[in-house]
Image (tube, rainbow, N blue to C red):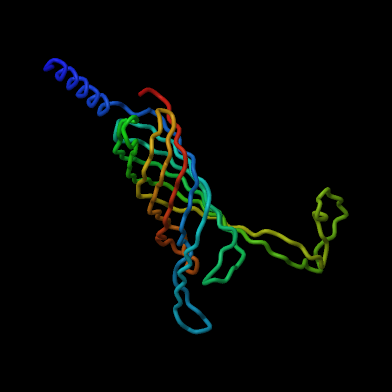
Length: 242
């Protein structure tokens, strides 16, 4: 009986050591949905009608996608490349829509720190924290309708455009899109919770990050800090030696 107990104890100890020392897969790819609560248009401006400094707190919701490539250096530290984009079709201020579309893309890189468990453990949950640095790219666009000048030349050119000629001529109503773009330093600090289902597949239950951007302020043009919130969820694919 003592020998049986000793053998069982040794087997359990070996299994625990193997689980604790198992290396994670070398490579992981994450693809998922991204929600951003953006505050990039908050700020103060001088209201010429009232002669007072007026505050605009214009937080708004943006939706899009997110992808990540993760290289695992060890069981607890990884390198992450993170890229994604979100969109807001119609911006507004204080409940008033102004017809501006905001499309913002992000790219980051930095370290991630895991608390990993053996993939056959009861939970399979892997919490992590990260600090990522990178840049944000923003494009603002709006549609306009205008009447051409009486001196606009009328070239006799036939084009295959469905909505009319390339040169509309004088005193013609035209529709156009105006756009402006800029880029800014950005940073993400936060963490999440992965659920490893097997050696090749998992689920990102949730990832929540504080996102800092430094776009030019709407009314002053100077770069200021904007405090945003980013939330992700999606699927994880893993491969490489374990």
